Length: 127
Image (cartoon, rainbow, N blue to C red; front, top):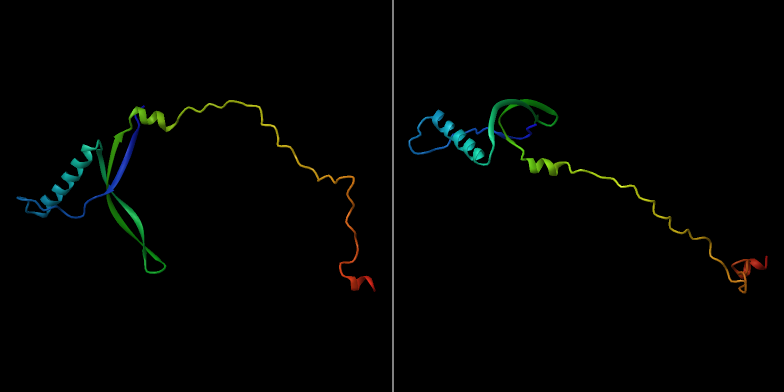
């Protein structure tokens, strides 16, 4: 099955000046021709032109709808690129790693004495 990638670009809004090109229509056609030839040299095929709605901000809280003219191009995705898109995934089951040893409470030496428990301040002991 043939797969394609697409490119959508804004259509030119102005024509291009050139020697011998006088009218607005001819200048606009020249701009389109140059754009399409440049993309064609990169392997893109022209598909269509569309005028699509686009919401824009108007003021602080409002919106307005404008229409944007775009050109749609496509080109075939090479087979090598398709293979790298979704590489084959192999899952190997492994034994779970052994859990890290848990550390318990510290052991006191049998020869050591427990700390003395009592009031921290000597004046409290007199009471």
